Image (cartoon, rainbow, N blue to C red):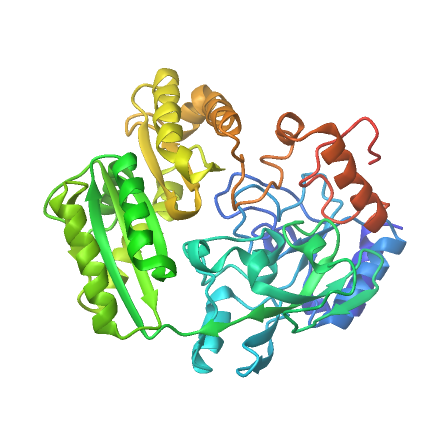
Length: 479
């Protein structure tokens, strides 16, 4: 059956206005937001509900048409765009954008996959609850994509990854059958927890169409500070002292290198550093508590005062209003986009045991500067949970393509090897996609990869669902 017929039949399912086949209409869907991974699509199909997703999947399965599920297309590793053959349908979930229910007593919310993270958080807010996942792209990333990549963000330290925030899922399987696993239970010991198979699978085993999200009570009080440190070791030492004093009230502890802060300040004319003293390293720390605001402020202030007195902290600024806290967070959240606009950064998303972070940063920095001596060391991330975005950036006078061509692959390999040698991971929260796929051959055992392929074959024997993503090819793997 030819492509014209496929487009005609898919249009009959979702409506002609929602089956896009002109290159000018599909181009943005087939290109990742950084412009690094660029593919071609047979068509972009935009179903309105789970029933239409089921029909689309059933049709594509019957006619051997590859399908690439897509949410907000904010992936950094090419997991949400097709290859360049033009044979695949992009299945956009953006029209599945309804919040089905909010249960304030059970602290749960059922949302469809196309609901943006910002919308989910806003609906929780209306119910006087909190959905605690928080990442910089919350206005464009969608819940289905958050689930498919097991998104992390700035509050993992207290609330966990997306995997910890999901109670149930609704999934359309590769052949079109719908599994309704939308159970809003915190205890359900009836065999295999099948929903976990789809979390972090990047759309390779099924298409998630709806999710039961966990909500939590809104904190009574919050306190935020921007801190200067001489080194990551000092920051880690203070983190330990802070946790000892405030325990689970420590919600975020974000490390920022001087080069990362400088990059943001250069790109945002209205932004300024919160501190009067320049430091080699900074931390954005946030506390949230069920205690009274005054009690939290006093406990946090005492911890900061102790750090300043013993010389661990070089300088500190405490947010005295919500607007101040928002300014602090803006500096942190703009780092990723300013790198994208600058061009020429090597995105290394690693995690190591918390105790190893200072040593990792030291060793990786030395290795990068040997490869490319004038590199700007843009390093930031979720120090409290062991996740560092180690993103070396080209020198200002070197064109992006030239820098990446000369040093990109070497830097990526060197940094990842150091992380693995420290019992870490080469992908902490960004997933695998295409960008990290083949590297799994060196960091995963043959047994582990074969088990993964057996799952893939069981769910998708034709290898039609997001083919070429996550799983490196093995000599025993078909397709």
